[in-house]
Length: 380
Image 1: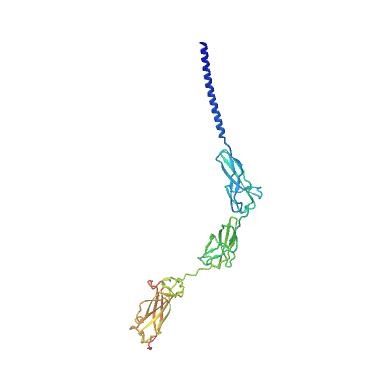
Image 2 (image 1 turned 135 degrees about the vertical axis):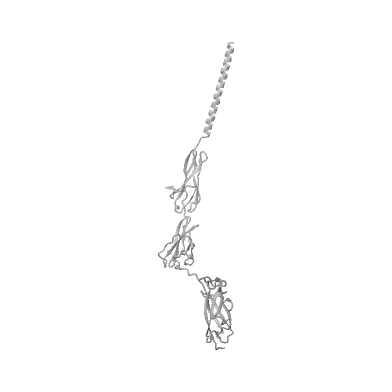
């Protein structure tokens, strides 16, 4: 009986020991697994395995690009750039202000030197830096603008007109941009000074400019530099001629239309010819040809001419007549009972008016004139 119980107790102790050992073994496996997991997720800062490099032509005016090189470490990895200018051997480097993008446009003043790019790689676990080898020496590659002939000015130098500056006669690497500064000078083109705000390619001549001359200074610029040149002076600026109101005479035309005339121009009765040239006492009728022109001397077509004798009742009053393409019109007067106006009458006075049809006959461009015709009552 005692051996049986002893044996049963031993078996229970063994089972308890197995259970304890099993739990301990499982815990050990968990610890090992966790430790292994931690080791596999170990964080590392960036480390450079191949240096950054520079691609592109090292010529003034061109753009070069930084290759960040090869980096190891926890991803993602971000990159920052700082371009440096160095001497011709890649030494004595210093940062180029503001040159912090992946690309850099080489400036004219960089020629003869070399470039490096300093790259900083960063992730959540830290950062590290590396610098490229120097580039080849920077070549000239282009040229600043140069003027081959002075700028010129087109347009009439008169008040209210527009002057324009030319941009021809420049050499240099394109593209070239242009700036302008207009100047007012004395009548000989000297003692010039800038005209405020006159910086466009064109300039409208001002009311205060007459008697002076105008110049323009043109500045040409490209990525390699800039240069300026100044034009010769214009002729002296003149005030505009006062408006005449007279239309221009078309090529080949003999007259202008009455409808094209405006104030201050006026109509003028410039010529008249009577047929017969002396009115006899036996007169039954006579004609008068009138010529109408504007105040600029152009013959006028379409003017309306009205004429009557003074005193009235000597002859009939003709209907208004229109001037032809040469500015002429002819009207006929027939005798009435009032002729002669006196026993010793020597002149017949006619009141003549020229006007534009539809206008107020006492205003606008109309004109009035008294003319005298010779009378010889004794003539047949």
